[in-house]
Amino acid sequence: MLNLRLYMLQRVTALLMAPLVLGHLAVMIYAVQGGLSAGEILGRTQGSILWFAFYGTFAAAVAVHGAIGLRSIACEWVGLRGRALDAFMWLTGLSLFAMGARAVWAVTFA
Amino acid sequence: MRATGVTARAHPLWLAYILHRLSGLGLALFLPLHFWVLALAMTDPARLDGFLRLTEASAIKLAEFGLVFLLAVHMFGGLRLMALEWLPWTASQKTLAASAAAVSFLIATLFLLKAV
Amino acid sequence: MTQETLKVTIDRGPDTAHVQTVFDVPAYTNQTVLDVVSWVQQNADPTLSYRYACRVGMCGSCAMMVNGVPRWTCRTHISKVLRGNAVTIAPLRNLPVIKDLAVDMDPFFDKWVAAEGVHHGALTRDDPIAPVDTSTAARAVADAGIECINCSVCYAACDTVTANDDYLGPAALQRAWTLLNDAKDDGRAAILDAVSDKGGCHNCHSIGSCTTYCPNDLDPMSAIAGLKRETAKSLFQRWR
Image 1 (tube, chains in turn brown, green, purple):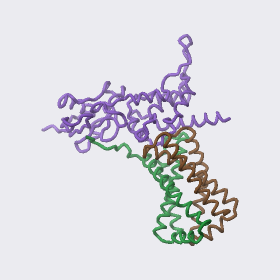
Image 2 (cartoon, one colour; image 1 turned 180 degrees about the horizontal axis):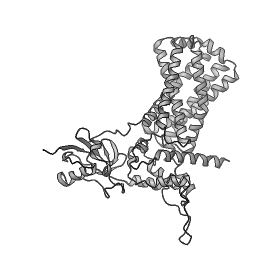
Image 3 (tube, rainbow over the protein chains, first blue to last red; image 1 turned 135 degrees about the vertical axis):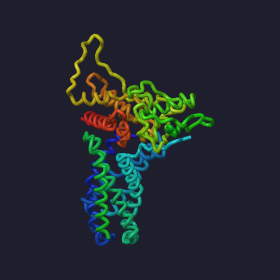
Image 4 (cartoon, one colour; image 1 turned 60 degrees about the horizontal axis):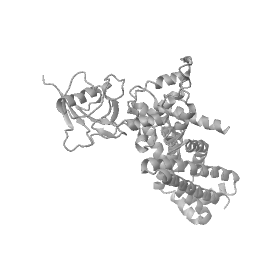
């Protein structure tokens, strides 16, 4: 169900995200102090190429990583095989990417 | 008739596996909601603020603690897995698995302490 | 003094309607799980089917699920597995049952071959015998791996095999890793291709039940990790 290419993609996106997750955790711990507001979040991210790159990379990597991970679960726990399994993976990945890209755009340049 | 269930799973690495799988599944299910709420910044900023005000409620705080824990435990569990696969270690895997969970819990607790 | 008895429950199939499944077996001070099964077959129900050959942990034919754990029954003392005075014995998991405690090992050995777990010779009988350097790290890995007795305990322990019938499983993949490290084997490309296919080593989630339960203390999980490293390396070499 996982071949070498999917395995490598899963590991490479994982390595890519490890520092991003640490950054995300740090931002959360910092930002949550004194409550959250749209103004505060947007004030930090709007118009910033740096945040766009950070969260853009994150969203793209998580779409790939999540789709491959859910593929394993769909195969082993749901019993999907063959084309249905491939279709499920692509649909999941593309949906995650579309939603993620939209969210990143919303808080940076929209 | 089936005389027995399977008890062959009762060892630490199996627990590390199931924790990694369930945390990954939880995160994947949460992500669409997370993305949708953030996209409100573009479509309906007032509603976004409404959602963010929800985070003041203690029930939501507890849920956030859970999410931060899932994220941390999945990351450290994943690093453990890659260390196990790519660095040819044999011993100390169980210690690694345990400390991964411990560090995750620490980070999540830190978040909770800051949040309240 | 009256002799103690063991309460032995045996999973029987496929036709289970009229067969006895619970037996009272006399306890002895020196008694393996296989002794218990043999006592039942010889004294209580001659129709009980099971499989064994060497009785000393070399042939790999007597593995069964004992209280839900896969074990070599000829080398497992009954006192180690009793709960009170009771024990349940079932056919190996992840393999089709032929009858009672005898499973069909064909899928297990088919996957052994599918993982290229066969000898790939480079020499003919006319060549001189190749010297084997016993001091290399690769040889140490191969020396460990050849101790596998094909008992299928790891295969029965593996949850990934249960969930994905394409998966080659720990024994076959460890065999592939052993050959990859054997200087006498010339099948590197074929092995790496075989273990990179859809049922290959990349399906392993490092749950580690194989290593936990291997009766010979082998480490299939680390062998599979070795295959993951070698296939990844070969991918980078192809890109260069």
